[in-house]
Length: 254
Length: 67
Image (tube, rainbow over all chains, first blue to last red; front, side, top):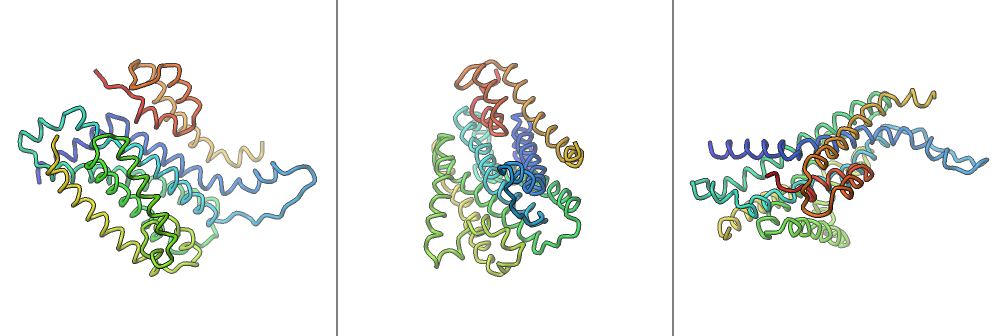
């Protein structure tokens, strides 16, 4: 347990020193500010880009538009940036060989994997929470009278999907030595999930649902209960992936 | 002007965040002249002109080892 805490601390310290935490925070803050701004400015941008004399009627932007932008930004660019930033989480230490000293001194390999995951999870949670709080503040400020339902659950779903992706990334980087390989596998997993979405019976169990149905949750076109299967599958898959990465990493030659 | 004043509470923090990201990256590019690939002018251009992704790519892929 003491090893686990110490190694997690080292992970967090490393994230600060390598600017990982700073970049994540700044990028997510930018998305957090940009989302309500884009929603608010959309009618003006559109009317400015229209040719002279042409008029279109646009509905007044609402809080839903702001959250639509938020979920679009985070589920695409936000997750891509997260995956890219954490792509070297295991690979760099293995290729530099800095981990070997610690492992020969008695640090267990389980601890390494668990600490790595905890470190990634903490940074992802902090950055995501920062983006959420900023967007929430601006949305309430800009659209004070709009009601949004299921907001917290919707935000939680995307967070869970992020955690699932981190678990995929971690297990991929235990399988492959190369940083780019881990990135590639994570990308491939997303593609496979998208392909699974074609099969109607699988759609309800697909973790991808957590990152695509957020806005429908807010407008109540999708019930909370319809996402519970996907959420359960994501949690189970993440746990299994972490256990698998521990097992693979134990056997692996460094 | 009216529009600009209305959006000032957004634009100021947005610009500060973008600048912070850009400046951290550009300072690092100039201070550490060893890169995994590419050279200084290329990284300066990438960091300055590719929004958000530029600095991220530099810190993840371009940064050389500190020694």
